[in-house]
Amino acid sequence: MKTTSRRLDATFAALADPTRRAILARLASGAATVSELTEPFDMTQPAISKHLKVLERAGLISRDRDAQRRPSRLEPRRLAEASAWLDQYREFWEASFARLDTVLEELKPRNTRRAKPARR
Amino acid sequence: MKTTSRRLDATFAALADPTRRAILARLASGAATVSELTEPFDMTQPAISKHLKVLERAGLISRDRDAQRRPSRLEPRRLAEASAWLDQYREFWEASFARLDTVLEELKPRNTRRAKPARR
Image (cartoon, rainbow over all chains, first blue to last red; front, top):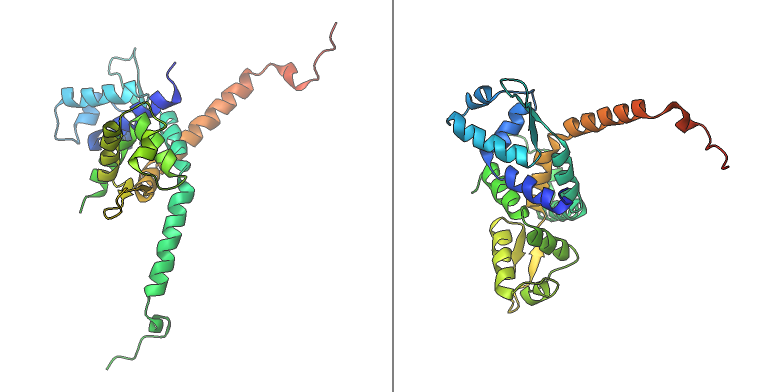
């Protein structure tokens, strides 16, 4: 069984590609076959199949072994695991955004809180 | 300026490595120099520097240009962006975990809600 760290390696590597992220987005609206997945992309079916293999090895999708058309399905557990990893840093980005808000507030000219001056 | 998609490519690729994830975890407790970052790893300083370059190019850390020791600092914005991308799939994993809970509940033998039988 893969360790969490190895699973995260595979998940993040699989997500580091725009076509693979787009395939996941398509599968979020339901299972799809290779040819259905190939259609919206300017890519060959073998190229899409290669991306599907990467996604499958990473556990981000599953494919029906028996059905002839082998539809791909989104498997959200690895995404949940990656999200939980990122969540450790949530307090950092929230603090960083809060600091930015403070700076922006301080930079704001005093009069922006007043009503707009009447047009001439 | 990089598009969101290109930034996500760089972020996820940078996160697909256990040493780089460990460096980010270390920087979460404060800025650190290359030699401070090298210490806990069984790696050479040039190897760590290489990882820092990947993290810096992805915008996950910043490095002080002027200070002689060039400490690295965690930059949480790209992590926030990656987290927001993953969040699109939250409803999927929550539904998937809820289904699993239901299945586990159904598999539970009826008597698990009763008190343990007395030891013989």
